[in-house]
Length: 189
Image 1 (cartoon, rainbow, N blue to C red):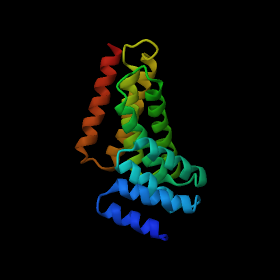
Image 2 (cartoon, rainbow, N blue to C red):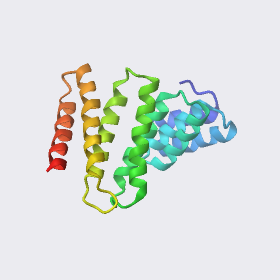
Image 3 (tube, one colour):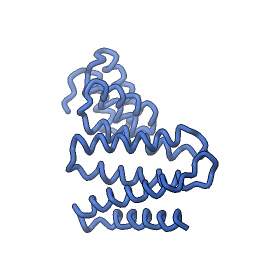
Image 4 (cartoon, rainbow, N blue to C red):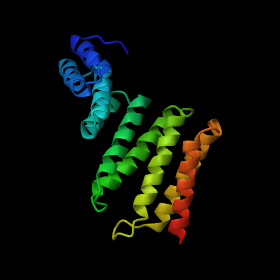
């Protein structure tokens, strides 16, 4: 992506130096100048993501997707941000935790629809399903749902096996498949 405005150029320079907070400030300025600047919106969401400001990253990618619903990479980073934000919520009864997990699954599914051969979407959706299975298997009132937990674990295994079929050397994926299989055993007991 080529920077076009001075603010975009300054933001990209800050990103190259690893200063994502400063980069976000510049990209905010670029977006203020031109609300329809897709490049600046993408870079703003990306900068917020890498500065661990997941809420603002999600908001930026929401705007980008509203303008350009076919932008697969926006779904990827928005889904990743939702996963990381969900992981920060330790209270299982906080309804935002489940909303974020389901939102991440939906985002990765949208990415798969747009780019069906991009394995990073399957991998991340598989991990999101795995997290959702863990969530639904918690013996907490209004959270526990054995069938939802089993379904999510099975979906996780399906997605992760697809990634493994593309690259059999992925030991990290083998490990995640085993983790989901263990989840199934624990849920069924």
